[in-house]
Length: 110
Length: 456
Image (cartoon, rainbow over all chains, first blue to last red; front, side, top):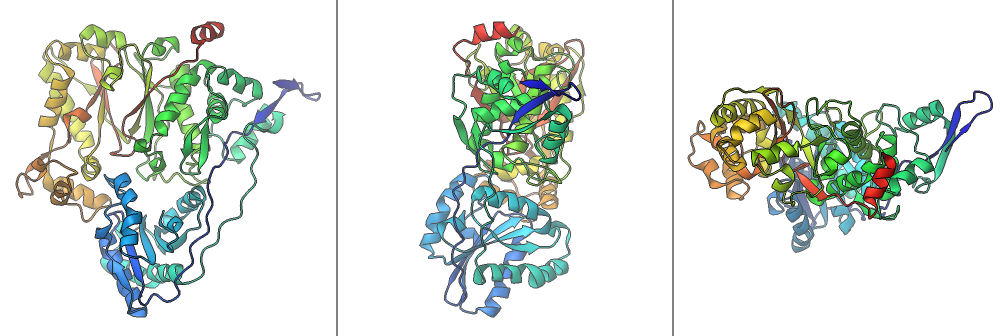
């Protein structure tokens, strides 16, 4: 376990790496959507940090540049970080498919 | 994770949370496209918020959806699990581990093969057996990793069955270990039940929450070490732990089960649904602690009313987070002397019911607290409508109506422990659905008694 060093007579220790294997399945990012006209953008919100003010402003900003974009309001998905986080998260893929979503905005981590 | 479904996604992140996002991104294994909100939205004026969204956040989000797709970070090669990564003196090892952010700031016990094997002898499971892939770095919660971090924390090998049960509780999805780095800076406390309390010499009496007794102290330290090393919750210069102020690790708790039984009350382990005599570990978040609660007299109601006043005074503010999620738990550590007075008249359920009925806050105050913290849209009406809170929270629309601070009497937890020679109790508040009380049976190795005898 410990070997004395020749110079100081202090033991030396061979120590193990204290972390464990990362088991993360890596995935590339999805292709982006250069033209949002005619596309559907989903809003997902964890109902904190003034999203009720931020999302409408973001919506307005994007609509000015892509008037043909459609938004699916965050209320359609529910709070993905609240009391029913696991239940809501489980329904999100189906809701995204149901609305034929092309892109999503998720927040708010602050 | 929406991006993993093949849908281009842009995430809104406050500028103070970018390091946290980096850690999460690596754990998810998918590149993140981010729109940054500069600063903290909760303190900006409406005009300032509008300016920041229009000038910074919205353009970022638009670029993230329409521009170049974000690219993955290059994979960094890591050692193999159990690999010897350094041979050095005690000081050299401390220095290396500190530099790598593999310690909690205190010196660690060098995790040598021999020491780690001594821990692994206290489980019948294989070193590579993994409880779960744990957030937020996506690492395996292997027996080997538990043993190594147990060694480093100063545990004794015979604590290994308790350490495994802790990580099994931590790995329960309902415990939400991924929220361990949230800004309230909550800390888990371990509560040990069963005969193993005495077998491992845990302190359940005077000074039970002080550092000083090896089992309590090193097991508590292990939890924080594991959260740092395997889950990746590190404060600066690391990342991943966003506790704004935070708190230090809590030493493990244990119940004075002899006293609890003598009073005729079920033990804490029985309250958690286990049979008397079973060894159990419960992991429980702690976001706030009351002052010491002194109470006197020979009437149950006098003591429990005192608890109501002090727990209400300490925890009512943060209870709004429980209202939002439908769950929070006060854990009361009752001195055997006080529990003895109460138990002559009341069951534990009667204590719970009294606290539930008598701890109140006005709807207006609770709403104000929620709006100050993070949720300007907080509304009891919506929470009741969504079935998160029971209907009595909207019994009227008077903002000055009193609502229960405790959502359900069953959420009150009571542990008999502490100084039997003093009339003091203390209460610990969980952080709503983050780290709710989560229990696991402690599985002993087949040769437990023999192994234990060899260590003593």
